Length: 162
Image 1 (cartoon, helix red, strand yellow):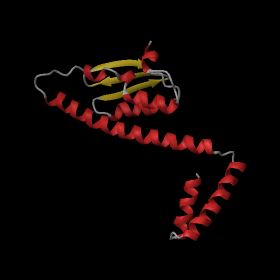
Image 2 (cartoon, rainbow, N blue to C red):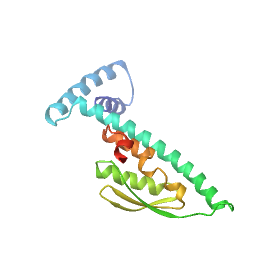
Image 3 (tube, one colour):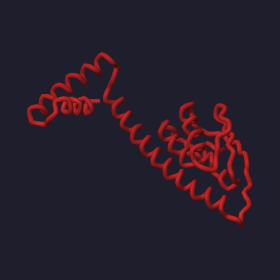
Image 4 (cartoon, rainbow, N blue to C red):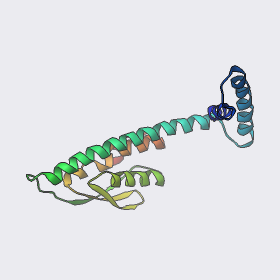
């Protein structure tokens, strides 16, 4: 928050000189202390927001890569005359604690070609897969691992499956 306030100060001034920067440091410090005092904000919350932002960026990059990989696999399945596609509906539970993380997982599954989340009820997912090979490892996917890390869950996916 402090850095954001300082950057806004510099942006609103339209130029960067030593005087503007030093006065911006003074202004940003005073404003940040005011926010911490009267709006129950803290440096700890700032660091948590930065950490979550990095996790979100990592998640989006992984999602993009997984979408591309799923496009290639789905294309091969559909265009191959050697392999007969066997659609399947699978159910699995997830160790994710928050509802928002489960919804993000459901949307991520639906965004990747070849899979659609049909139902999400509490921690149980019902997913339609274009082929049985796409159903493998849904409950221990990279999405689950990243979302667990965002939640701060320390248990491994292997322990959650047992």
